[in-house]
Length: 202
Image (cartoon, rainbow, N blue to C red; front, side, top):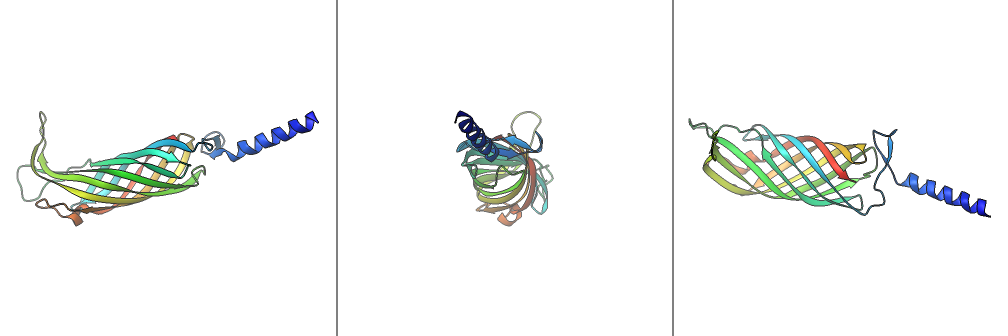
């Protein structure tokens, strides 16, 4: 009787351990993850290729928050333009500056699978300005205004370890309400491609 009970216990333990395994590129493609966790957290750091004023632009930033039931992430994100396009029709080296931030919701499908996808959106606001940067002191700002932004995105993800993922995806940035001279909402809106990493407890 004791032997039968021990065998049953071992079988059940093996079953639940298998059910809680996360597929990764490390540890022989399998690694125990936080499958039993209903509340965890992660963050993503991203580099983004996009357009601004019909020109090539690079943005950097990311997002993060709490991860509920290995499906829904609730958090916040922020991005800024790393490139600084020149403002046309001026000879004083004025440059465009762009940033935005907001709340982020993301759905992750089959988070424990080696290859999986996610989709979500950032909704918030930001600022655009014309400025000249100096080596010392603060930038001289000539024009500035705020705007509303909504940016849906979709990602393809690969689990590297149980705490690290590679992310690649596409976005669409939709801007509304900017009223700055020489710029329009449509010129600040556009598609983007991003690449980065996610790190945290999944």
